[in-house]
Length: 496
Image (cartoon, rainbow, N blue to C red; front, top):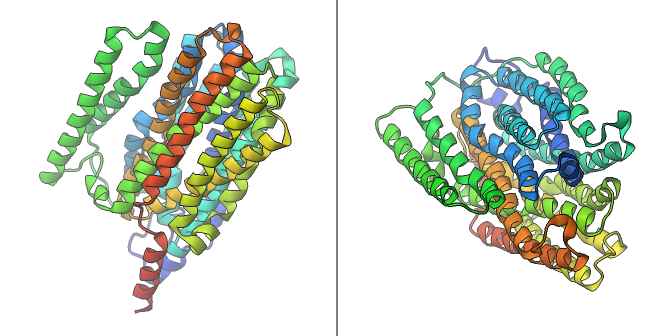
């Protein structure tokens, strides 16, 4: 039977594993609800961030950390939480994660201090880290190979729906200003949703990895501290004027990560249980796929971040108008996510390459359009470009998850999913921090004092970097093995 519904049998016959449990689709809907919760929260805050910064009297750097702090909390804990799910049960980790996420959402809506909100967002990211690997690893081990592409397409579509609806709903509830709460509603609205998810999760039976393994706590400490020391100083350094300690911390962080890799190799040679089974990196699909994930997500979130600030600060539009700018982008992403499995089935890795080239072209044309008419952000030309960008983005990111994780053995599904999502959210943090530095540097003024021409220049340069990252994604994809070849080999194997 599928692990998504039971843990009592680990030795089912091959035919049953190939067919899967008929209730797995119902269970899939339930486990995807926490993913929708995280996606809605992420994009509602994205569109409300400039107003949030104004209300809290926060600096641009502090606003960056409100975004990157969440991704940082996710990145530093994802691998360990994937391992915990394999050992202690994925359902249990989901319940703990959703509970913590909901509590932090309530506290986030109550606070009025930027530093406290940053701390809350980091803890909320840690709670979300308990959720994400459980969803991906559950999908990976619960569906037969022929259904995985469809399941991951649904996963991508859920993220796309959260993207589109989160941006729109976030803009609407902030603009409605219910109970005079303003931006705080983007936090409070997650509380009833989180409670609903908690009510439905008990329907799912527990699932674990094939065997219990001790946790590599030393490796976990090295990884968490290394990632934190590498990413956090990027945002904090900008706020404090790049003091020496920032560079020193980043250097130490890099050294700690190198030590982590050496320690994991040492444990593997001694036949111990490392936090990350580095054997998965022997597969070209996994290595190159993770690099492609890193590059594409470096540019994606940075682009969203910059677009919000350009529309609200540069063009002086309200939050609801900003959400309308993001609407075609989200709709395009949602549609291509639904169709991505068909694209891959027909064109293989070529569909992902086409998507990355499409992203780069759309960004280039958008920059040209803004240089031509800076104020006409909502004209049909720009909205069409944003729709095409979202569609191209979905063609790349949605099938990439299945391609990367398909090479991971089932016993390491939690660790593999943790590596994938760590890479994704680490890229989010680094992208917003690094390209945000470029944006503020080219802007050359405090946000409220900059002219529209300053915003056009800063937006064009920094978004141009996002376009360069889209081209770099294309280069990475050129080295990624075609999934259709593996699919044909699998069919031949089962036929024999």
